[in-house]
Every structure is written in C-alpha cells, then in structure tokens.
Image 1 (cartoon, rainbow, N blue to C red):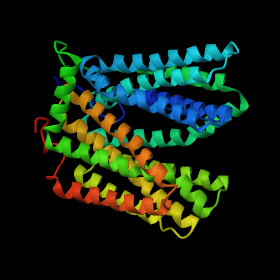
Image 2 (spheres, helix red, strand yellow; image 1 turned 30 degrees about the vertical axis):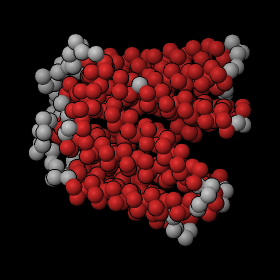
Image 3 (cartoon, one colour; image 1 turned 135 degrees about the horizontal axis):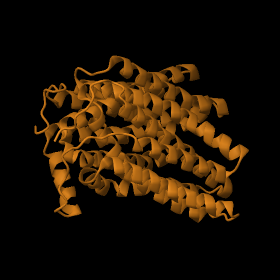
Length: 408
C-alpha cells in the first residue's frame, strides 16, 4: 500500500523530521566526543580509548540485521521515538549516577553500549521512513538539505563537546543529550506518517533476515551497489583516520593545522550538500556514484603528493564535496528500487557493511601506518578506490529514476 504524500518540498512532516533527527544527531555527537575525551583525559590509556570506541561501534553493528526486520515489521515512527527515548533514559541514568558524586569508567562504557544499541535500532528505520514522508521527485533534494545540516552540526559538535566539558563537567554535557533527545521525540510525535505495506509477523526473526539477504543479493542493482559500498568504505578508511597523522608528520604538529584538517573536510561536505539541494536530482545515479568514487580516489591519491599544506587543504575540501553526492545518490537509489516492506532490512545490510568495513580498514591500515609512509597508503587506496568507481560505473546498466521497477 503506497503512502499518500504531499508533493510540496517542505511539508510540515518533512520540516519536523529534519528538526527532530538533527537535534538527536547533535546531542548524540556532542556526548560521543565528550565521552571519548573524558576517558582519554582520565585514563591516558590507549586500551580504554579502544574500549570506548568499540563500545560505540560494535553494538550498533551487531543489532543491525535485527533492527532492519523491526523497521519492516513495526511502525517506523514509533520505533524511532522509542529508540531515542531508550538512549535518553540510559544517558539520564548516567547523569544521576555522576550527580551523586560517583565516577566509573565502566559505567561510561556500559552506557555507551546501550546508546550504540539504540542508535543501531534507529538508523534503518530513519532511512526507511523518508520515502513515506517525501515524494520521489524530492528525495534527492531533501537528502541534500539533511546532509548540509548534518555537516554543520558535525562541525559544531566537537567544539561544543569540548566547551561543555571544559566549562562545566561530564554531567552537564550528558544532560545536553537528554534535553535534545526529549525535544527530538516531542517534535517527531507531531509527524503524520501514512499507512504502508508491512512485513507479516508470522515468520521467525532468522527467516526474515534470510529473506532480506536473499532479496538484496538477488537484485542485481542492489547487490552490485552494496558490494561497491562495502569496498568503498574499506578504501576510504585511510583518508578518514590517517590524515591527521599525515598532517603531523608532513606539515607540522600545530593544533591549528589539525583543526583545519577537520574543518576544511567538513566545509567541503557542507558545500556538496548545498549543491545537491540546489540541483535537486541526478539524471543517472549510477554515474553519480561512480564519478564520486573516482573523484574521491584521485583526491586521496593527490593528498599523498601535496607539496604544501595550502594545496593539501584545497584538495581535501574538493574531495569533501563528493561525500554528500555519493551518499545521497546511494540512499535515494536504494529508496527508489526497494519494496516498502523490505526497505528496513536493506538499509540494515547497508549499515552492517559500512559499520564493519571501517573497523576492518582500521585494523589493516592503522598498523601499516607505522611501517610505511602514510602518503603511500593514501595513494594506493586512492587509486584502488578510483578503480572501484570505474568498474562499478562500467558494469551497471543505465539507471534512471522510474526506469527500474522495485521488483527488478
């Protein structure tokens, strides 16, 4: 059953959705940074820092396939609101624990696990509900708006997290997430989401997961897109985690240079989001994804040979422009060609691939960075990423919105 939607770009539901989800993202990002920094300052331990990172990533990954089934079985609006409330309650419990004068790194790690589970439940439902709110002709533009807002908030999050932790303490920083989550849930409650085709509850969770995997990997467009997605996330890892090390080793350890490294990349993604918002559509999403991957690969390779820090920043910013282009094209393409009652499971597989590719990349490229120059890693991974883009673009049949049915 198709959802009846208003064809206007910014309907009340779309505006409320953007406000709600970005409030939630902002609070979670600020607290995520604050927890990592607090543990770093309190323990000065690489092991505890690893525990904190794993606590924020692994549960999100492990719950992904189950959360995709839930997003297809149950009311997605309620699932999003419940997961946000779940995260807020866990964080509030930690606030009360610290407000009593207690202090425990173990408690921080435990709550990080709970927060990660809540986020893992929420993500497939959020991606799957968007086509219920937005008409197909506006999916790309709304993704552009959302990614632009995301970029601004992710740019502000580290600064706000550091300011809160420095001026107040961890308790007040955690409370910020509780407050933003409450506002997000209340805002989301006013969104009207129409009826849709749902997954029947007669089968077991395992059977539904198997059906989702079978559906995804028996559709050539989806299968090839997700294989490309997994390889690209793995190969993007060196640029994502090793550029601060490259800056420190090649251009100096000045704090402003490390800050500029993060800000210029985020500024590039913001510009890319604005371009998508103005453009509003892709004539061929496969081509957009392929060209973005080639552009990524070339920019990463050029980072490895940049002669000055200024040229390095220019290349970095230009590379960042293609992040929202690739993400928007991928997400909208999946939304357009996936059946409504399977969309949650498909996005959970996307979540699983992206969530596992990055840790695998860290395990490989992290130790390598101490044995070979970071520049080599960026050049090699960049060239391979460009090859992935060329192969993906050349092996796909022409894709245009509306030219491929959800059943194909």
